[in-house]
Image (tube, rainbow, N blue to C red; front, side):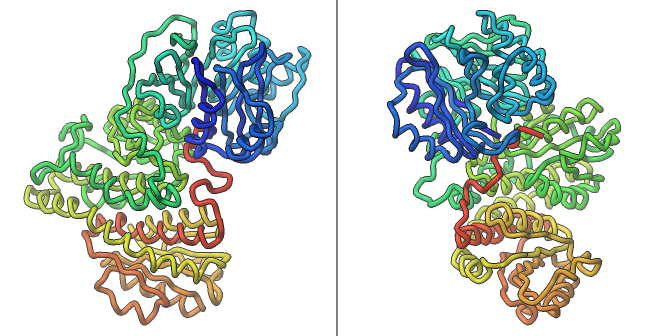
Length: 608
């Protein structure tokens, strides 16, 4: 959450900062600001609202012409989105200017100490505390001041600092919030994520927790928290910058829905070789897999819904007991982890704060950790024992689509790999399963043709106040995801329920005209779900049924029917989610919502 950019070089800083912020706006868009060193001081321009509002404000004043600067786009935690709470913040008498991502947990006691020392606060933010604290410790040595700040604060942060006493450098540090450095020719860059600098350089350094960087236009110096110099390896970005652009689509979400066949194909194909499943990134031996006592899956949001599906899939395919936990709950319930257990953590960004904390808790208790992430060299990836990348490419829209589908693809691979290791998948069956996996992207692509049908349904139901999703088994797991997609981008109240639970209270909420989306593609449970469809229909619900092509009889009991191709039961989540994503997209459009940047949400959740 929140995005940082920094520039130092020979060119104008302001245009580069704005360009970088636009690439990071998915991380926060409550307010934005930039600070540029010029005429012996640091000039700050900031405003509540989007980057476009900041550009408009800048256009009405004299241009910022300096060549050193920092910028920030905010997702509010402490204090409402206002001009005063926007970053950058000044420290002391203005000699320090600072931007910050994360949360300073002990900011109240620090604020009290600083007020006693004579500092005055103009905002409600914990970040202004950080700016004043840096000024408090600063005695003409930026590195020493940063070390003292890091020893004093508790919490998470990525922070960048300008000082009027040192106009030729930027100092920055990281703990539990991502920060990268871009290496240029006579210029250097700082950012929360690679897309912000990819237009200018492909050579990056990835900061680890506790590391400090000092940027000058002709040099980059790294230090540990004790001030000792560090040597770091360059990470060379190989993916195309155009992958993070809209490419002619109206929204990133629509582009990323359309990219799902490719994302699934790219994730699967390197791991399907001659009718065999191969996962070279996984270092568990067959003996290790046979010794697994329990699989613990931890994730947040949509990734948790992948984990819900994974529980059904792992237990059915490999016969290994599996628990799926919300990462935000996992470490606080003191989970029981025994020798031989593994923990699978799922995160698109690889920086999700709760998931990272859960990973560390699992490692502390002795679990072998396997991460499923999309962002190469992210913190979760680096700290896991094994990492399996989803190869979905950059995902910009806040509401995940293609990363979700790629994560499901990895779950299929792992489940079948484990099934083979424990003797539940014969060589003949493995060949058959590989063929089914190889055919999956084409089936997903066929479902993109439902766009007109889903757009028509959206027109029908865009005024709904409440929408319910029901399903059983894997259909329930995907109902959770369909409901989340709808609520997060259209702002319609939506809930998903295991269909069998309807009669235990939820059915009292059904009234005439209530839309109910019934996912009913599980052959073994179809008749039972059909019974639930009849129950809600009898109480006046408008039923949208999602079924496989063989069940024509559902037309008698549903108002609208969506057909998906028949597939192996394990693979149905990958098909069922596509029409639900498209439905949510068009519902948001009909309601005039910002599809890519829904209110109050950010793409990378790096705070608890």
